Image (cartoon, rainbow, N blue to C red; front, top):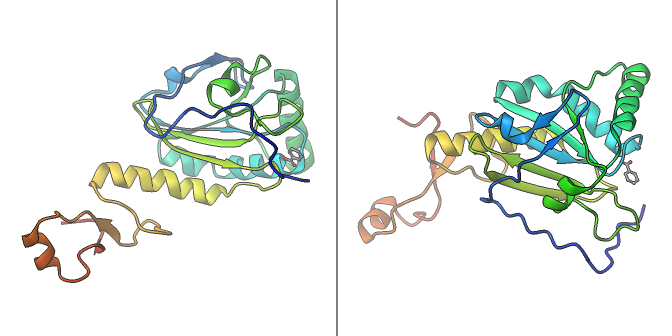
Length: 215
Ligand code: BEZ
């Protein structure tokens, strides 16, 4: 598959820190309002199309990791512009072909209203397919992370678990997480930018690690 970009026609407007646009939609598990999930974390992710190989592999990986997301108080919500009957047939085919249940809702978006609100429509595709978008939404309904992958490359579910975990540690502990951080590893702390603090911290004042949990 060729992911060579053509000129974009649909600007992506949502940014980290924006409120996640609310929607109510039919899903494979009944009607769902995004605002009804407030109070917990949400990973809202779009995929290009049902019954496609990369998407199927991603959905099975998300399905197998659902308990790990639940342990983080994080709900998974899939979305594409395919119809609800298509989603239901795909979920059933995944169950019968691969023995994997999809335990999270998949939103239908035939009018593309949700995909447009989130900038998920693939501006470079001839079709109305959604790109592989991920929006991590916090318990207050604020977008905390966004990532985009092309149709040809599957996402890493362990990386998304790591991302949600890191965001929660950042919120809880008032720290930041360095490259490749995983639970149990050292975090980084923001030093005061004063002469006193800098001279106390020494020459490496600009990168200070701290153990977790911090005492
Ligand atoms: C997929 O395998 O998920 C896929 C393939 C072609 C176009 C879009 C998605």
